[in-house]
Length: 70
Image (cartoon, rainbow, N blue to C red; front, side):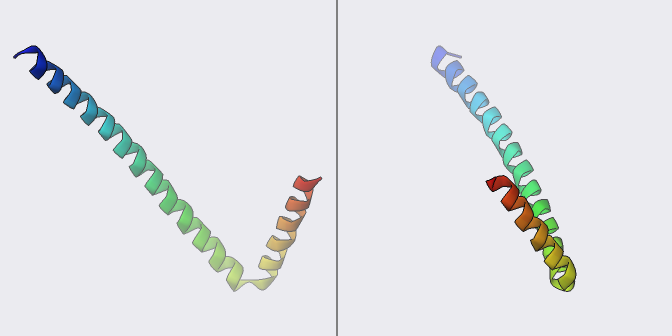
């Protein structure tokens, strides 16, 4: 192997390794996003089903927002 071929081989290996790391990170984020969206949809369904719970949720949410503004 000459020097150029060795360099290119090492470069390709490094790029492949970095790509694999980024793909793994992306998959992790996609799974987390899916799970969070699923939980939010479930919460939304519960609040749509129970109006008193929705009112309580909105009341607490308002109090939290007011607390942050002070």
